[in-house]
Image 1 (cartoon, rainbow, N blue to C red):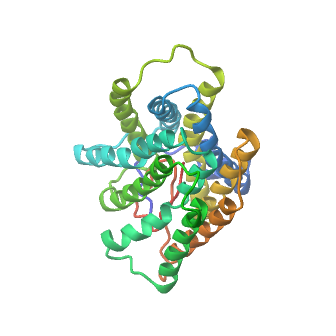
Image 2: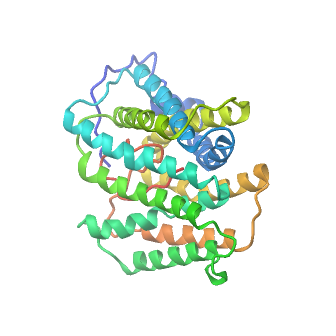
Length: 339
């Protein structure tokens, strides 16, 4: 695994950087941070649902990106890193920001106006399935195997199970579900784009992440006023949900994930993917009172099994997955999922 790292002043041995894995490992075992990461990303769908109770979907997305940018910018300053340089890099970051942040975040926010957060979390888990389909077309180094093809088929059977296809999708909001699936598809497209354009830029992962989320924030700042009006009153709970969604789910979680990857490797870190829909479902049922029928958890388990199979590789190359941003631009081999 190779990391493109920007040059930065080395911290004093007597005062290690608070962002360094060695410093964090003294404070929290990686397993604890792994669990916190899974909880944050799993609860993101609950935060979206609560946020849309008080704000328009575009406003939820803008707030999410804004607070996430603040956290990442603060980390960049603490680490004494700098933003990427070069118009070409920033052009690619703008496209990545749209595909991996502005568009899917907005689609999930709109989707959760009409579908439960549990269903949104499960739709999010289809990203590896879309990623495999796209990689077979767009990335010549990805070759299909029988196991991966079986995983793709199993995964989509799981999707049909979640949606209750044998019932004719009765009681299902087709538009909301389609938006959630489109958001997951956008993640997959974005990661294909990142692999092709942002590898070997010479900028650190934190630098790329901060730049990307910052650009996405500007994109939403331009769009939001044309489609929304300021709320007549601001309710505390939706506001707190948006702050948590941005500061934790789009900012702090990325820093946690970056540290876990650095400490235990991308293969172990990528296992967080399989906890997210479970936590999202539990949170929706426990805190939002969302109804759960048998085919939802069964279908979700089938989706996760299929997604896991599509990530198998004959080679030993492993990905550096990231869910909060496309900060890891060194050709990740697996398609991560995220909220």
